[in-house]
Amino acid sequence: MAATEQRAVTVGVAAIETARARLAEAFHGHGQAPCITFASADLMQQILTPKRLELVQAMAGQGAMPVQAVALLVNRETKDVQEDVQALLAAGVLQPCDGAEVIFPYDGLCLDEAAGDD
Image 1 (cartoon, rainbow, N blue to C red):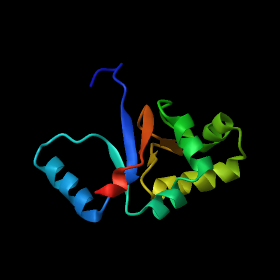
Image 2: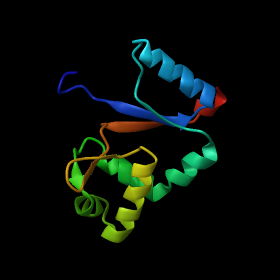
Image 3: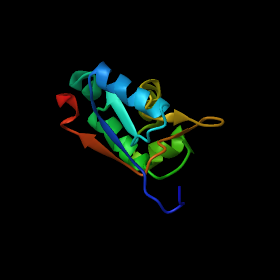
């Protein structure tokens, strides 16, 4: 991938069968666009609260950073950001890095409102 290429991830809702089909396609060598899939709209809304979505959007394209830097980026208390980061790590939205850093490894995200229609 070229260094200047922009990478965005699509976030949405899909039935487990759809997620399995995408996974099978990937295992068979068929390229897949980056996506983060939730089992229900309720779960997606529970994980991606407005504050967490703001946090993820602020981290897009920024590279790995410690939680304290994320807190400064979104102008929030470190303790509150730490709780949100832990929830986003558990959901697979953020990824841990060496040391105490975390990363959102995309340049942006797109919420797929129609993803639950599968």
